[in-house]
Length: 232
Image (tube, rainbow, N blue to C red):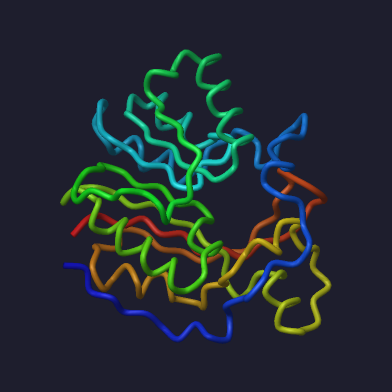
């Protein structure tokens, strides 16, 4: 059973996104959004999973992490709402010769038929912060239940130190903001993601940081929290 423990998030949840490019538009660019370099945390975690293990990449986009997981010998299920992103993922997988290792689907993560203790690795990079509170909690619990006992969970989210969060709160912010900040529904408070994990998982690594992003739009700043945890 997954035990829920959450900080109050009322002040940092957004009701509606501001105008910004859709993810189909982002992945339709000649040099598509976010590039194809894998998330370092995901690449490191994949090396800890035996070849032939099962992985789930939620919010896979054009496949920068799914491709890395497949190259590491894992059987990957990739999920994203963007049809254009999934199409590019499939093209990249065919070109790299790993198409048999990636089962890619256009779907809302909230519509998945979750199964208990199925995956050796679950990846959710900047996914949970794109969900409202109700859906965030439902997906989090489902991810925890779907991990095998020794499985790994990799999560990254935007935090309240992100320039996009400052703008939402009416605070003065001169740092450049991401063109897709309008899609973020919930900016995590400091320590919030760690608290969620400690309620039902074993936290292996946790950090909060500020970084520059030049993979789409104009160069901009992000504040993120990263989590690596093992299953219950």
